[in-house]
Image (cartoon, rainbow, N blue to C red):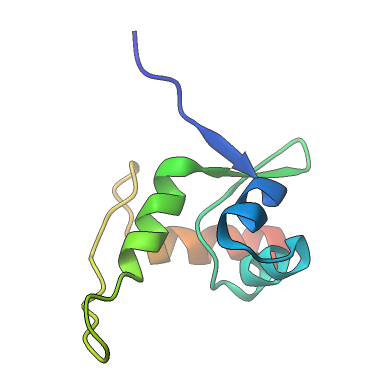
Length: 91
């Protein structure tokens, strides 16, 4: 049996990042937010995608940033997957 995938709502993500839901929506539509699912009109975020998105933005020292080249479960680079889904949802 496989482990259940944890999902967050827009409100959950807004609380996690201390942002407004409107800001999370804007990140999604501007293509600068994490990958998301849209099921029955409801936007959901997989925890694994949120954690990958956060890892890509992790800084160890000022002015030193090496974005990780992580792949989603489908094999697409996370940025490519995000661009594809943002075109579908907001385009």
